[in-house]
Amino acid sequence: MTSSALADFQAGADEIVALRILISSPMGGALHNPAASRAIGRASVVLLSSHFERYHYGLFEEITDALNAGKVPSECLPSELRLRHSRRPVDHLGSTQWDQRANGLSNFATNEATLWRKGDLVTCLQSTHLLEFMKSPKPDELVKLYRCLGIPDIFAAVTRRPHTRSALRMRIQSLVDKRNAIAHGDASEDVTQSDVDSYLRAALQFCRSVDRVAARSLRSKFHVNVAWYGRSAF
Image (cartoon, rainbow, N blue to C red; front, side, top):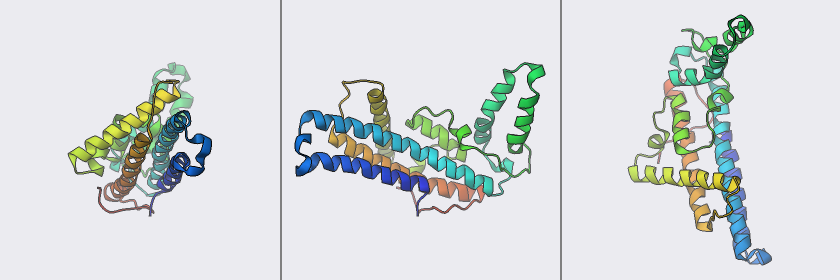
């Protein structure tokens, strides 16, 4: 069984496959030309990267829901998660004039205090607070994100083989870099169908393993059971 986020990502991946079939199909007709193939390759990268990013957002929505419902004592959560969650309201208070802080302090007490009082059960987590820093799903950003779950390096957690880990990071970095270049108007950025196939395999491999690692982390570190689970990393 998978998370809803992974099910959605796999459905999105089917769109990339459909575009691939369109190019290779004898019925493609006018699409059998370099310009059409190039355009579909570029579009595939933008679409795949968007689905890949949405997977992590969706997964953290499910994770925060599970933690909020799991009767988890605040002190069981990693400090990195709590600090990241409380960063914006604390920064906002710090930049507000002293005599205008009443509303901010009241909101902090309502929405953040349970994260910091020992013995309080966590009920206030919002995934948007944890994801706010992530501008794009590059490997370094993903490592920071999953440290919130007490996972030091999500890439090391999903694969035991150094060469596989290095190749995986490289593919994901390249996918996001190409997506950003294309989305920002770089007309010179070319994407072959071989590139798209490689990015798709890497993204699927990574997300399927992240699903398993995240589920195991929730169970082992926070004693929270989730509907999705898996066996070992690849």
